[in-house]
Image 1 (cartoon, rainbow, N blue to C red):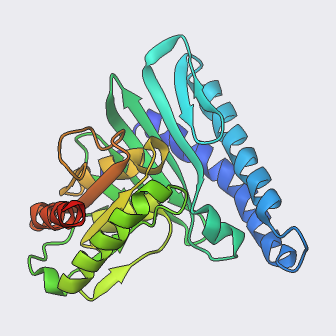
Image 2: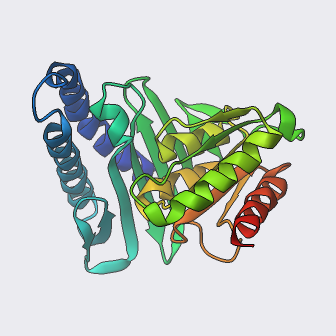
Length: 269
């Protein structure tokens, strides 16, 4: 087991503190399902509380670092070469409906490259982590992407761009193309966890359009350190910022990316 560095230890402690708040709030969600307004406002508040805790803890540990956060946007620090990229609650819709599949994601970028990342699922008590060059782990156990080569036997995760109507037509075309090759296609509604599941060999691949840096920053490094490959769909941009991603084990990444690319071209034609 690789030694946990001081910077990753800081990230873990911040995530665990924020998770305690989210777990308490998650326990209240079921009681709100019958209310007129529903749990949306409550979950938004829970999301913001989690982000505030993460910001305070990380700021205390590294006062000069900058931030990129889902709720609060960018906060420039004296050190702009180091950036915390934070999703305080990835899987908001799951959380809102009482589905126990959501996570906290923290990535640390240095000079445009992700150096460390954690994704914490407090309900299952699974903490995925990676630091550049040291491998990927879940709950202190080394993880590796799968070695499957036959796409018919693979399980794929995907994301539905519910907030981005401009991506929906491509999404349906891509889903049809991948489903025609593999019957095992799943949507679990947490990009951060889905990427970690690719890293752990639970999924063989994953793709999504409409993602943001905070959705994927940590997970992309975890995949890379687990021996998988992640790229933008057209393979020309940094997938942290490309607004789309395709990730898979090293054996099938190229085939999955080509399949998705061709589905989009077919639609355009």
